[in-house]
Amino acid sequence: MQLTEKHITFIENSLSLYGVENIDLREDLLDHICTYIENQDSEDFNQLYQQALQKFGGYASFKNLQLETNHQKLAKEIIIVNRVKFAAGFLIILLLVVSLVFQMMQWPYANAYLLAAIAVSVLVILPAHFYAAYKKSIHKYS
Image (cartoon, rainbow, N blue to C red):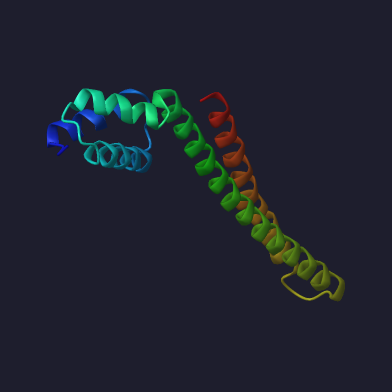
């Protein structure tokens, strides 16, 4: 069966209606459904569309795919945040050690290194930690 723009728009709107919010996921599902329908010999769009939905697990399966996609996006964000926190923590330790050595040797700028370590803690570590906690709490309730 050859699909028209009207058929493709109908499929895309129905995917949006049934909760597939992620654009990339919606495009992939649309592509799979259209490919399945176009490879069939029948000319009854409604019947082929229902078969395609059943073949791919129905709308409940699409919702599960959407949830899994959201979980994967959250996991990637959390990994990036954890890497930033690790790098910032390493920088803080380095600044604290340098500050301690400068303080023990009574060299100048020991306090500047200590203040830099505190600034990195306050300006990088804390916001990254609270951002990760916020994203986790939003994802838990959605």
